[in-house]
Length: 209
Ligand code: AMP
Image: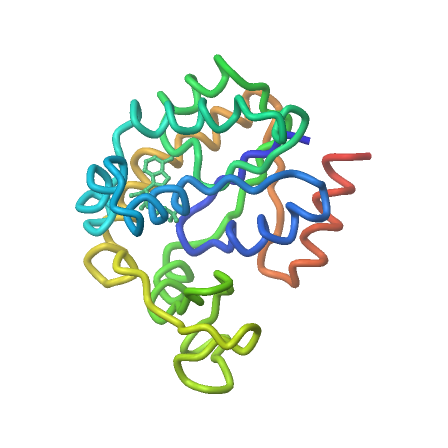
């Protein structure tokens, strides 16, 4: 199954995608992770994306589309994948339609107030990528991942100014994609305010009847 995960930052797309990837045997492709890895590696892509990402803005469509197009040429994603965080603009969605056939778009409907609360205080494990939260899901020992003992950090773009910019970009540029996919009959609205296992069951019922 070829999925697009659509929704605001902090909606839980990454957490659900990580689990859904095993459940549906679909590689998880997060454009945000690709950019963060490129920044960590100091590659030309990373150098290009660093400032934009730290400000909470979007990387340009041409760069983003070409990296997704290239990734989708690999053998492991011939039949299935989960695109998490792509497309984020209408030109990206139209470009994707030109080289891949999206089967389902899962829309994570989460209000701005919840997004702000979730992103402020979000903690990520440097080693395993597991996501924690200072208030809602705190690790047992401050700064240490319960799962693997790795060091926890706060993303640079989870700071108040960048969160505001990211939400503004989402509302202006990404929200129109809800209608885009609804009109194509590909939109599945899932109640994502529940345990991940229930979300996966819902996705299965809805998308693989
Ligand atoms: P994410 O981890 O999905 O929240 O992405 C982190 C940041 O990477 C975003 O705030 C953007 O700056 C950049 N980014 C990720 N995906 C895209 C995309 N599809 N188009 C443009 N920028 C993106």
